[in-house]
Image (cartoon, rainbow, N blue to C red; front, side, top):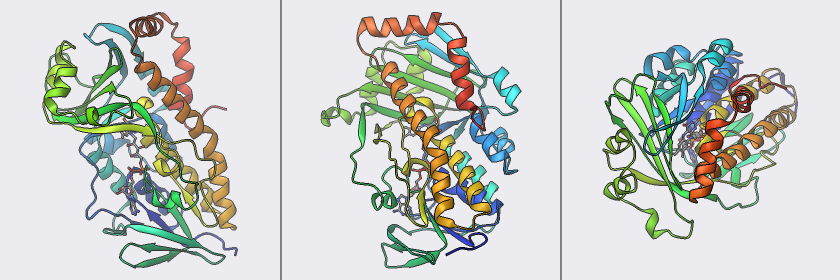
Length: 387
Ligand SMILES: Cc1cc2nc3c(=O)[nH]c(=O)nc-3n(C[C@H](O)[C@H](O)[C@H](O)COP(=O)(O)OP(=O)(O)OC[C@H]3O[C@@H](n4cnc5c(N)ncnc54)[C@H](O)[C@@H]3O)c2cc1C
């Protein structure tokens, strides 16, 4: 069936990707209805880096989230790479590129990012809570989603933005097992003050088979995450309490040890094999549901936002909805596939465990010419991406 533009998009999942899609689709005149499984909007207690490419992508639709992020989060102008004891390996400068692009990179609490995206959607957001989608049917005239409690909703297109364990994805993809990253990750946001953790501080500390990230997220708070290689099969040793995590980072830089103040929740870092087919008929996927990635690049949230922008561009003037959705998928696949692979490769480098290999890594990062990194950074942080 052909229609000038879709009247109504059903979005399953009110995470970063679902909220961003609601904002971008509304901006191009599409009515949206969001369905969230949880009983309340739960952004999580941790933080994310939100990089300039996400901000620039939204600006192409005249949506500017920078003022909200300036108010609620913290800009970081460089990312320091340090040894576990806090000695410098290399600093990755972002300020010059940010000035040139006209957008900064932020570290922001997830709740603050959620609020910023809700602001971008505007008032009277239609978010139905307690709505766990179980299946969908796509036909010539529309798409229908069924929820756990038997409710049904009908619309013109369906966007599966239901995250890593997406139910919607399961209906278009052959069952795929998550690929464990072979390391555990503990993370927390804490009220924090330390002489070395100044405004806009962002640092990665590299050990052997272990790393630690620490970032100022503004308003006297810091975000930290620590990792340790633990083979996927060793499930018992994956559940460590706060004291054991503190023990893993004993002897690390003072600010690292001091940041481990709250009982962290252990989570497994993982991605999935890259999915080539994201949709069928009037349904498509977006964000982690389409391209879950390991966290090393700090790009998962930004890629979900980029998806939302490209999706809106494709639906804006669409007369053939299924082909507009396939057009969106074709445009997004190359960049997301490349960055999923890059995140995995970087993660393997960062988690190197052998003394020789981890020493070589540190030396390489210390002495490689800046040009090695600048073009790579620019390709990731720019929108539209070069080439
Ligand atoms: C430890 C860690 C650190 C990270 N750090 C960063 C970082 O620094 N920078 C960055 O850019 N990214 C980071 N990421 C990745 C980032 O969090 C994700 O890429 C991003 O949240 C994806 O957004 P999403 O909307 O696709 O999925 P999600 O944020 O997972 O949202 C999915 C939503 O769908 C809902 N849902 C699920 N199933 C259903 C259903 N059946 N029906 C209805 N609703 C449903 C869920 O409740 C949830 O609200 C990190 C991830 C992890 C795990």
